[in-house]
Length: 444
Image 1: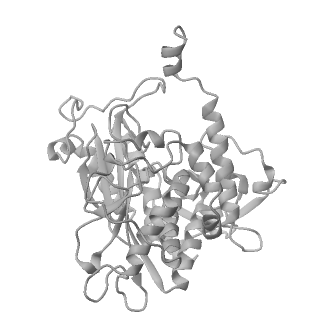
Image 2: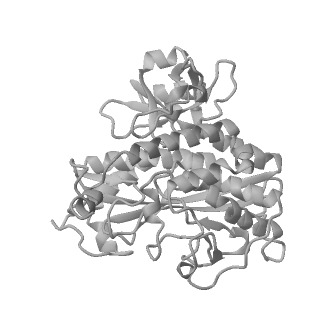
Image 3: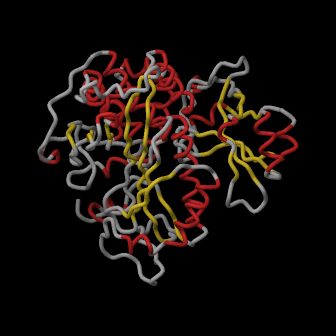
């Protein structure tokens, strides 16, 4: 706590947002006066916060967190304290870890799930390196959820009407917004790299510098808050829905990943002569084998599966290939020392802690089980059949039946996550859509 106390004094902080990421990656917690935070009294939250759905409901199974609805203790991680640049008064935010009263970690906490996977890597002397890429849309403020989203108006006074891939002018339309985003990120020490305009109308992409998986998950978690807040101040929304607009490509969170040997610092995907190693092949094979059962994490909502469609800049199978953007796992051109695998399957609507944990878990299982991948694909992956679940229900079934994933991610977590997602699915299934009213009301 000494580092935190020094930070609070240096920046004259008056309030602290004590936050935890829930299953959806939403920030939950409390706003605490500095005097109370400095008193050392631990923040407590109900464990049930972790299994609250995006609609505010809870699974019926009360045993997932304890039938008495017990508390958990939230312990601040000093490395995560940051100034909140958009706050009116000097305010800090601190990400917390969740533990039981005996000090043991709360198994269903997403941050704990990632730590659990990283501990398995460390026991082998391996250190994962991650570099996420986040796509998102800027949209006009829309107060009516029944109306389709529209691109916002830029500095020219006009909204985009066509696709402007990699257009500098299209990014310049929103220069004041991106200046604020970069400033906010700099203040929070979020190491963002490049900004580009993606395929969709007012669809953008921000890339992060490669680094430690937990630090990057924290950065993505804070970045989403940052972009939403900055957009609101420019009278627009930023959305991380996987498929926010009909007819436009969806938004992904591509993850570049490599593994280095902790002792030597060498990339274990490349041999001394620069050729791919057996561990490289097995890592890919693990992604191929276990990704279908991990889809509820990579594609956590009904909307997520609308993105994963043929010829819409999103993969539909678990093929892999060198510099091939039509497959699920792309190997970019690089020097052998920088050899990495890009997982192109996760949507940007995923929880970054869980998505990073899931992709590393699949690769770990592949390496420890010495799995063999298919041959790399040099042709169009969209010409091949679907290999991924087409809907959330199918993905939940596969995940529930995969024992190796329960062992590596934690049985308690998997049970709670499945119950939460099934509850969300049931809530959606009760809704009658405009498509059904339009095409079925008077015709069937």
